[in-house]
Length: 115
Ligand code: 5GP
Ligand code: ZN
Image 1 (cartoon, rainbow, N blue to C red):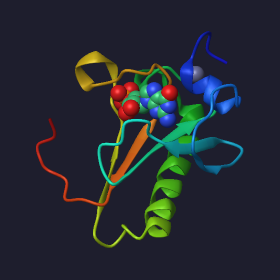
Image 2: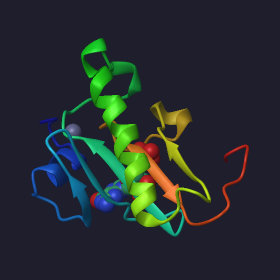
Image 3: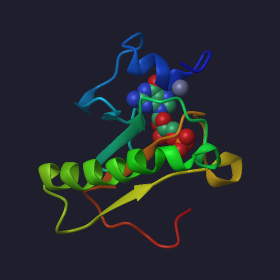
Image 4: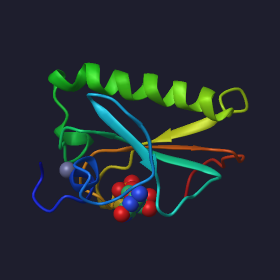
């Protein structure tokens, strides 16, 4: 567990969250400040600080993240209309929690370029 890591605490059940899905490798919970009608965070249980800290040993994990994202989009009924999976890395990329996570956003039309 990362010291004083918010998402490690949610994964450990020490801080409550609206858990939508959990398996051995990751947890999915609702974002506390949703930016779309559907906004979930797909969070690997392994404490990885940023995208830059991924290693080849994490390749299967990241593939699994995208498998779960697609299945969740189907479950939510937003797969066909479209959705977005976002990973923010470091300050200029918009990262504010230093435990890798992937935003699943849907239920509205996304804009491009993003803000
Ligand atoms: P980032 O800015 O690092 O890409 O995304 C962090 C996300 O975590 C933000 O969208 C923010 O709303 C969400 N967040 C921050 N604190 C909490 C919390 O305590 N609980 C939940 N469920 N989400 C949080
Ligand atoms: Zn952590």
